[in-house]
Amino acid sequence: MNKKTIQNRRSVESRNSFIALKPVKPNISVFFPCYNDQHSIGELVENAFLVLKDITNKYEVIVVDDGSTDKSREILQRLAKKYKDLKLIFHAKNRGYGRALESGFRNASYDLIFYTDGDGQYDVGELPVLVALMRSDVDFVNGIKLARKDPTYRIVIGNAYSLFVRWFFVLPITDVDCDFRLIRKNIIDKIKLTSKHGAICVELVKKAQFLGARFREVSIHHYKRRWGESQFFRPKNIVFSLMELLVLWVKLMF
Image: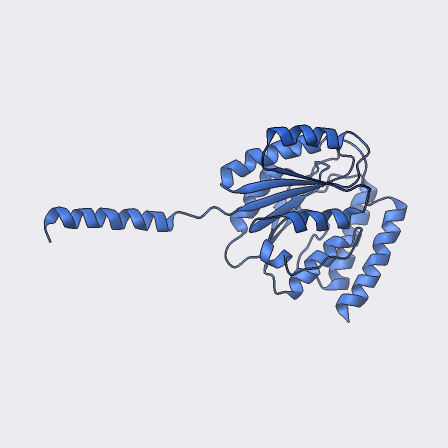
């Protein structure tokens, strides 16, 4: 074998080694549940596409509109003309937060699924942090709010709720109320979600835990709500969520 042949072979081997070491970009589905979020949903969708094009070559953005009565659907339909990878799911009537999440999960196509709420209290620009933590030994990356930017009464109730359900259900994460999550699709595909209201997050985490999912947590920012009001803190929804939690506890813990 002559010197030139040896040099060419080494060059090929070196190039192949570089290709092998080059990190593989994950395929990602991003979805947002939306209910009367006309002031924030457009910006969230735009930002999601900006972020995704930098971290992956294969992605989609899904918005599940859960019966909005404002201009959310008009905004989304305009955006759909701009982005071919935007998928819209419209519920004919409001079916509840749990059903909106279930629709998003069911319609996600790619290996990793990220979701956060459509009200703009989280920054989708922090998604790359979650992606970086999704190593081969992790299935579920969950956010922890650095500082909750809500009225004092909501902070007190929210912290008490998180502590209660974490103890009551023996959950593997600190902040089950933080809807900023990246999950492997092969975990989601094995989970049947039944809750219609706030208990959906507890159900999701606990059922993933039962499947042997490996969790990782990371601190992320939480921002003051600029528009609208929380659906969860309405008396009717709080009662429904507490009832769901009780039923869920009986089903999962016995």
